[in-house]
Image (cartoon, rainbow, N blue to C red; front, top):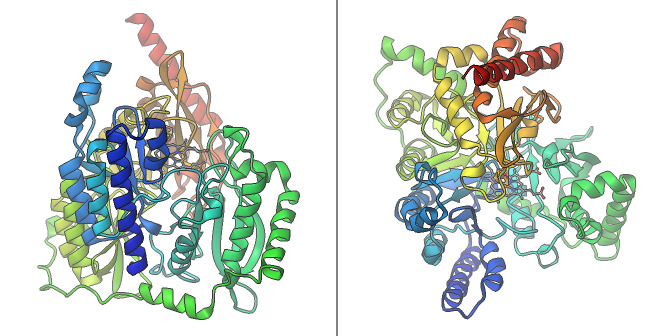
Length: 586
Ligand code: HEM
Ligand code: SF4
């Protein structure tokens, strides 16, 4: 893992001290709320529907045991719903008390969020984070956000090159970059270094793939202009091969062109995807001209030297595995099937044949997808320390990956994770869904996401059934901002508002661009929206149709593409008809 140096540490601590001063002045009335707002947002503090929401940056998802413990302490000591009860009671919001607190939430962008910390305690939280080199810088606002990558970066057998040193160099370049602090809109970069794209790069403002050219040199394929929201667009390749040492100069050219020409006049058209779509080749020409100037006139100031790449890469060498405890007792017959199923779904092969990457599942009934209670955060920290050299990764699918587990320790780890409820063998299956916080927390929501997630988690508890259905990406967003990536779900659910009621649009056949899902594409709508009470049955009818229609071993998304939407539409609309009939007879 990258270790913060004195400069990094000083930056984070001074930021925490500066934030305390800003908060104190706001509390004393010396700063107006409008003046304080951009200052808190620059540190990851949003104010949401019922309470503030804090987003903590986890650069490219890598997190250490001490950092997980700090998050556990923040969840336990600060993330308290009761601190907000007066406001909720005044607002007459009866559903609020059912929402979870004392937990952190892993996001699709490999960050962590808290939903219930009062602003009055915000400075203490920033100090605690700074002690473990964490912060909320650039987790909000129209700047370059946390650079994301593959949760298996540096350990995947299909890797061309490790993307983490590049992600770290880009983190340093983009952090507080004075020219890019006020872009037209937020800007998200993802890097994949493997043959399989596990970072959804085509869906990002900039998506980078590491590859080798015909003579074996390392470089990047550069895509620009991907994004979801109201207008889902797959990024366009604007450079098929850029030598790796030029990547910062080229990114500078891309962001500069966006900064200059992006639509600042219209919030809904401000993302780079709209500029790339509208301007096409003219945008690419602009980037190339800017790049030529950066190289020829400015002298290519951001060229990455071999020595710098070597220096940063040295932080990412494989750690010495955690000391091996006594060999676990052999599996009993009663344990065998459960263990094998877990290995099949939650354990990934590793570039080092003696090691494995293990995913701890944070998807279970009674818990919002991606939520980790204070106890679970602390338990995950212990597991990472004892089995994974003190390191974990937040995954795009809102789980935690332990990247350095010795093969012979798998049984011991499984037993412990199972006892803690973190070994559900559902990775890549229907219940391993992505969901945004939706109307339960978010001010912008049209509908709630979490009750739908709960319906599916409760309905599909039988692992035999889940394994029979096979891989399905279920993605749920509470509004068109698409934080839950519904466009790229094999099954996508989008909350829409009709006359103040919660309704849901269902799409099928979307893809994030992974090998299993095929080329990145947006799902297609299967008809008018469904009422909240119908969505569970609609999902069930879609899956029943799949099981009727599938050919041997065919996966859900492949069946949808082969047979088309019609049989699924018919099944889903039958749910609507039968609900309407029940409504009439009641
Ligand atoms: C509750 C607080 C949140 C608020 C207010 C919020 C707000 C937004 C908004 C307004 C956008 C659209 C930006 C645009 O297209 O111009 C957006 C995009 C996004 N958000 Fe959130 N978000 C929140 C939480 C989350 C969470 C918890 C996640 C992850 C689970 C997330 C992941 C994303 C992603 C991946 C996008 C980019 C979608 C795209 O490609 O266009 N957000 N968010
Ligand atoms: S998709 Fe909409 S409801 Fe969900 S977190 Fe994003 S802005 Fe909020």
